[in-house]
Image (cartoon, rainbow, N blue to C red; front, side):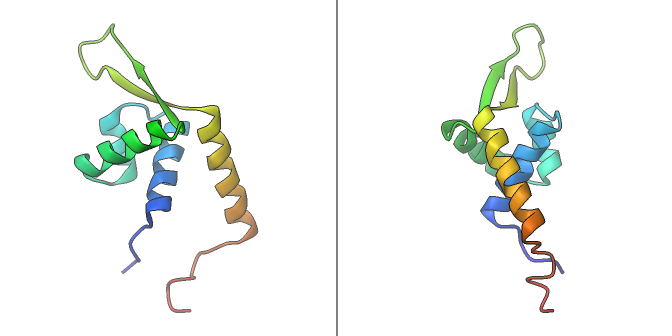
Length: 96
């Protein structure tokens, strides 16, 4: 069984999903493999931190709220992706 994801990993998964074009809240929830309430809290936190921005879509009757990665969010994501390349952490928790 794999270890639980850290809060950092969850947030990076969400930022990565938005970077890849997933912008609707429900789709972000599926991409992050999480339930609705925690995703709502994390999205709100990421917006407060300036890593994501909310864009309202008034043309559609469906989901009006869309999320987009800010420059700050893209920089944070790039930083952690580079750190992962330099210091691979796979197998760190598997007891190897």
